[in-house]
Image 1 (cartoon, one colour):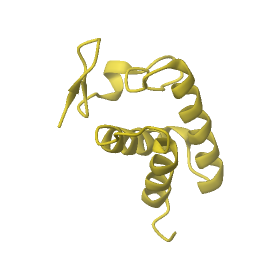
Image 2 (cartoon, helix red, strand yellow):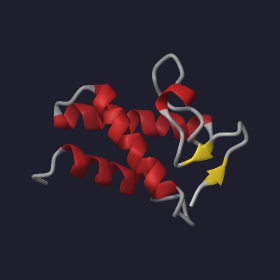
Image 3 (cartoon, helix red, strand yellow):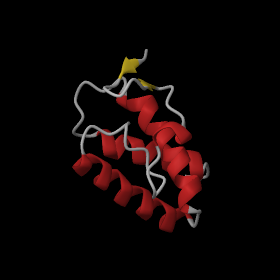
Image 4 (cartoon, rainbow, N blue to C red):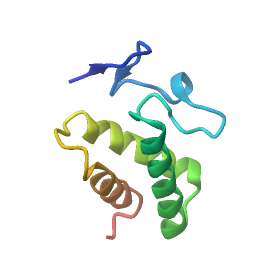
Length: 94
């Protein structure tokens, strides 16, 4: 299941080089700047919690986001589920 975005990118197939900004955050996958900022904060927290490099956390987090956002009918809890999935991928002992 892929969803075409406004800029011609297909959700679920976007690559980091296609849509990264200067900070490396993929701007095309988020629906708004506010959503992007929320997820950026969650990535920072997750990096601190897991003692992982932010770039590694970002890759894992954005993959989890892409996997889950395509299936989400209600987006209110998406940050929670994405964070949980990324955390489990970064620290399988949890």
